[in-house]
Figure 1 (cartoon, rainbow, N blue to C red):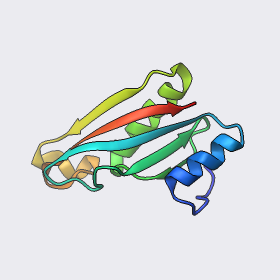
Figure 2 (cartoon, rainbow, N blue to C red; figure 1 turned 90 degrees about the horizontal axis):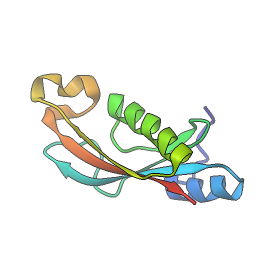
Figure 3 (cartoon, one colour; figure 1 turned 120 degrees about the vertical axis):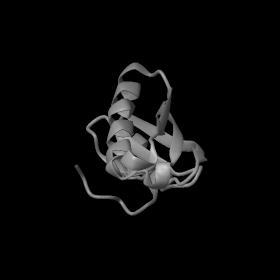
Length: 108
């Protein structure tokens, strides 16, 4: 994985596209309860699995990256829902039983 460019995820996405990379962007579109990142947070991912930004953390972020690679490959956007009970929340990165919805799309 490469180091962050320090530009912020949207500027990074633009720079990666200008370099000819295939890129997906994940955006938090809804939250309920306690969520680590607010609505509008972004994570950008390229075909090689490099990423910048954050939509949650923990296992959720890993799952979003995996789905983003599928979106890059097939071009079909996805909406991902993550929610857990309080007793398992910390294991997947959502404290206090939070839930989030993330929209993942390929940038063309």
